[in-house]
Length: 126
Image (tube, rainbow, N blue to C red; front, side, top):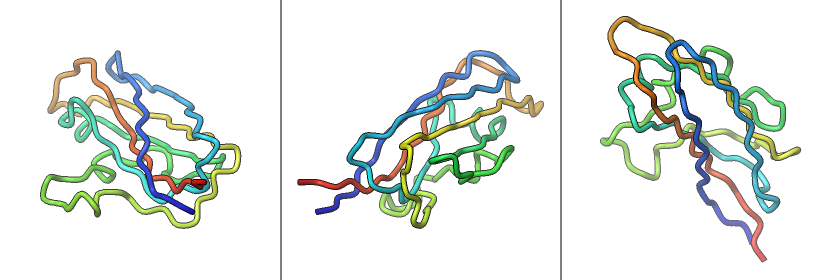
C-alpha cells in the first residue's frame, strides 16, 4: 500500500552572500518524490534574497539560480495545493541535494535565517 507523507529538511544561512550546499538522505521506504516547497523562519529574506538549485537522485529538478519566491506558497493557497508538483521522480540513490545562495538585493538587511525544504513523498507501507 502507498501513502503520501511530507518530510522537512533545514539549512542555516549564517552569512550574507553565502552559498550553502547540503545533502539529505531520504528514508528507505520512500519510493518517489511528488512535490516540494520552501519556507523559512525569515520568509522576507527567502523571498528577496534567495535562489537555489535542487537535485534528486542526481537529476536536476530546479536549475541553479532559480528564485526562491517561485517555490513559496501564500496563506491564500489551500494546504493541499501548496507543493510544486514533480512527476514521476524516482528516488534512486535517495539523495536530495540543495545548493542555496543568499544574494544582497539592496532591499533587505541580512540576519541569520533558516531555509526549510518540504518534500512530498510517496512511501511503501506494509
